[in-house]
Amino acid sequence: MASLSRPRVALQGVAPQGVAPQGVAPQGVAPQGVAPPRLAKTRRPRIGVVLGAGGVLGAAWMAGALVTLQERLPCPIGEVDLVLGTSAGGILAAALRCGVEVEDIVEHQRGSSLVALPNLDELDREGGALPPLPRMQIGSPRLLASTALAPHRVHPWVAASALLLVGRGQLRSLTALIESLLAQQAGTGASSPTWPVRGQTWIMSVDYESGRRVAFGRPGSPAVPLPDAVVASCSIPGWYEPKVINGRRYIDGGVRSSTSLDLLARVDLDEVYVLAPMASYDTDNPCGPSARLERWVRRMITAGLTADVQKVRATGATVTVLTPGPEDLAAFGANLMDPIRRRQVLETSLRTSPAAYGRLADSRSAA
Image 1 (spheres, helix red, strand yellow):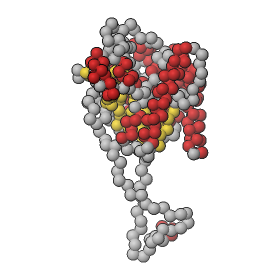
Image 2 (tube, rainbow, N blue to C red):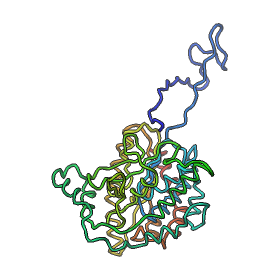
Image 3 (cartoon, rainbow, N blue to C red):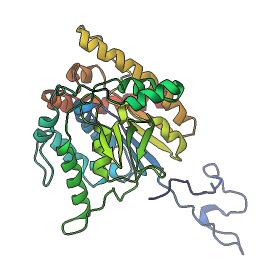
Image 4 (cartoon, helix red, strand yellow):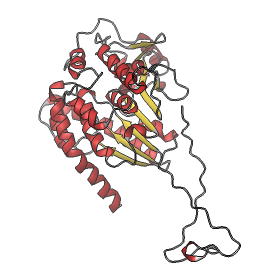
């Protein structure tokens, strides 16, 4: 897996326009007996893309926002240096890294049948807008015990997830989807790899026994096949069964953080782009109690995201964050798992994301 350490580059001094640097003749002519200066090669900025958790509708919103992001990047999103995905963002990260174009992701969200990819109806039948009745047993007694012994070591939301009953939901169609993506990446007749071959791909999950956050794909993390990593990242506690990998149970990475952006403070990147469906910097004021509760949770997530942005910016990286605005939130409703609203959320995002990105660019220029 490629290293993300930045090569040492000596920056050459640039003279003011119309003034030749000392020792260098004007118009690119070298003084007698002096070799012409070598032109420094320009380097594409090292880019990271973070795709956050957000359920069925978060994936639809991100699909629309990806179109805007792709138009502004110097390379295909699937070829950036690092892609970090959590839950729904992990599915999109896998698709992009396996060579699926942004336009095809949009059409898949619209319900178009892409070759070798399961239709969204199959995924919706496994999920649905409401979870199946859970099993009558506590999610993770071992995590509860770990929290009792060392409460400061376990994130509060992760500790709370241990109290949820064990979910019954299955994610077999999601496994088939990711296996199809890997097969497309390998090509017809070729042996299928178990992980994307382009760049670094991190898929976020949480170890349901220790409460530890795990970035599958990051050096030093457990080596697992991509389908297992994505299913683990999407295993919402209380809704789906925890994913068992090598004898350990894993749950949705969004329980710990909707983006895990803070991990990129340890990575050498020039530019970081974040799509965060569960945060909002420009929200609304709904009347319904369920929607108001959703906005309260969203405000908490946004506060955490803001702190993570500051950590990454402190490294010198430029961080650009896109979140849903009032029109998007009206399209979402209160239930991010409701597939009936998918098309509305997608089309709204395709319309609102360019304007939202433009406002970010304008504010950056003014600053």
